[in-house]
Image (cartoon, rainbow, N blue to C red; front, side, top):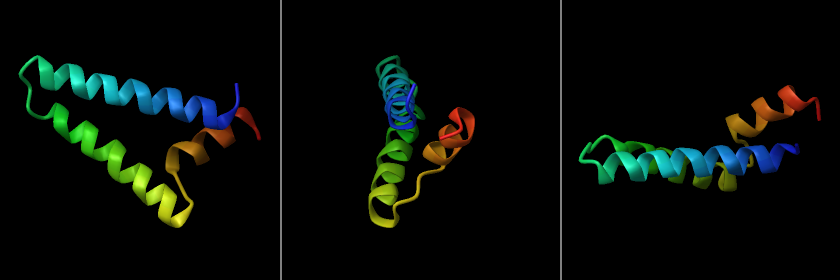
Length: 61
């Protein structure tokens, strides 16, 4: 599995978990959505994402 693909799957899982938590009445699920949104924005601005770095080390790319 490629690094970017694994990162996108992780982002999708976190977003779905946040949506599910919000839908089930837990307001802290919104924090997961904000976290993914802000980390995506930060990765676009400074070209560094901790999850991408982790997956590169994991898959030895």
